[in-house]
Structures are given as C-alpha cells and as structure tokens.
Image (cartoon, rainbow, N blue to C red; front, side, top):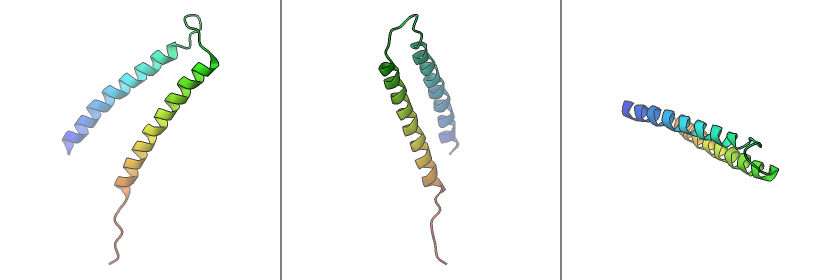
Length: 75
C-alpha cells in the first residue's frame, strides 16, 4: 500500500508543479503590451480552465465519497 502512496506523492508533486507553471505562463498572455486579445478570447480561456478544475474537483470528491461509504448491515 505504501508503494501506491509513494507513487501518488511523486506524481502529484510533479504534475501540480507543472500545471501551476503552465497556468502562470497562460497568465502572461494577459500582458497587452505583448499580446492582442479580445474579452471573448480571455473569457474562453477562463471558462475552459474553470471547467477543468471543476472536473478535477468532482473526480476527487467522487473517489473520496466512494471510499467513505460503509456497508449497511442489520444484525
């Protein structure tokens, strides 16, 4: 079981770090001195990222709620 935990920690740290760095790079696109974009462009980016975070949250919550359910028994 510890191997699964170790693998989770290793992958989570690498993937979350990479995702955070990529989000910061996307944020750099907001610099209007370097880039031209419309409000609609910005909204599409934000909507897409918000949607992905909502899916991520739902996956973790679903997995945790499955694990937390105990079996119902009548004695």
